[in-house]
Each structure stands twice: as structure tokens, then as C-alpha cells.
Length: 158
Image (cartoon, rainbow, N blue to C red; front, side, top):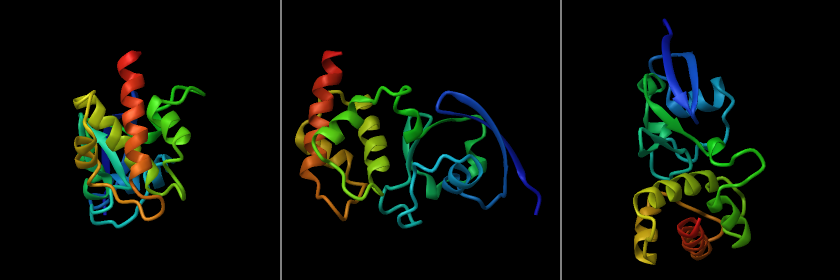
């Protein structure tokens, strides 16, 4: 089977890769590009562990083909921090202990980033709705919601 040549932007960097026509974006990110932050939790788009942002839209990378990234802008968890400086969401997740095993954390962070980009002052209900596509089996959701609220306040003041 012939590979598909893809030219895209990932976390602000121009990237080119070859992938198989049936290879998911999640597989490309993890196996071809070494960006292992997005996790495969379910493979069916139900858990949100593989969430990334493509052209400003939150998607489950297990449901997008790697070839579909052609000419698009992809944001992953690896692009959130700037060097040693954590994104406010990452910092607040740590401060609020909003993580345990870490499998779901990258997806929650990307989903929260997408939410705050569209709604910088969400209510608790809006946060819960915005993160509803992400599942956590370890810690529960209250700490995650509080971390997002706190980050939103910090980001508004920045």
C-alpha cells in the first residue's frame, strides 16, 4: 500500500510525513512523530484522551485520518507549555491536584484550552459541558473544574 505524503503545521512547526491511507492522526502523532502526549483510551472517540485541536476545532485524533491533516494547523499537548513555563491550565491542574494516573490529563487540558479560547469566562456548568467529551476514571471532575475556573481567572488577568 502506497503512503500518503502530508504537509502540515503541528504546534507552530511545519511538519511533513508519510502515512498509510487508513492510519489515524493519533497513530501518526504517536508512532511517526514521537508526540506521545495524546493517549489512546478507547479508539472510538468516546473518552477524549486523544483530543487535539485541528484548525481551531477540538477533535478526537483517533477519529481523524493522518492524511486529513494536510494543510491544517494541529495543536497537541506538547505545544501548550513554552519551554519550562507551563500554560496556566497545566499549572492549575498541578495546584488543584486535578490528575492522578495521567491518561486523561492531556485530553482534558486540550479540551479546556479550546473551551477558554472560545469562552474566557465560563460558568461551572459551561465548563462541565465543555469537558463532557473527556472521561476520567481516577480523580473525578470537581478538581478538574476548579482548576479550569482558576486558570480562566488567571488568564483573564494576564
